[in-house]
Image (cartoon, rainbow, N blue to C red; front, side):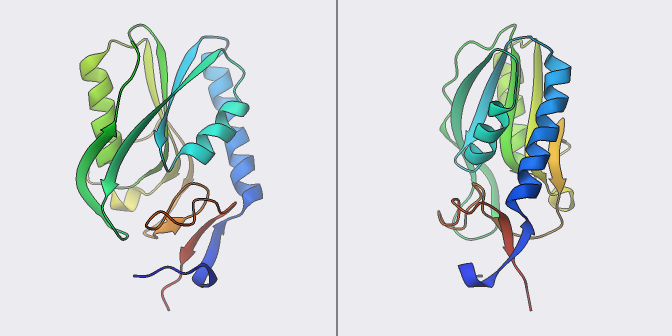
Length: 178
């Protein structure tokens, strides 16, 4: 499947996304109160979401960035997670918030949660995803926080890409099958 800008249908507008980001941040502000948090952004897809989210968080916060991938070329997850860069500071006794763009099959989320749980004894580890595609889940992982449920669509925009393109869109779109 090839994706062209003119073929995209809007799934979530910029306004809907920003409203959801504020709602998620409010839940996290209530949960963490004023405790320090280390937010881990999963690059590259979650960068737009992570930046907007942390701008709305009120607790003391440090940011870290890691790169994982389960997509090769095209629109289908390979099912194998590739750790491109997963160097992290000491997370022992810290509140950790993982920020991801989408939980699809769940392979990436499970890999990352297992990695943190096997290497650190955190105070808390929470997983936040902008999009939750439960229909595609093949692992037993669920995000602690998520913005929108989506059905089986390949989505682009607001950090999500198709072969590196469309991350810069302010909305989330998909190609309608006609």
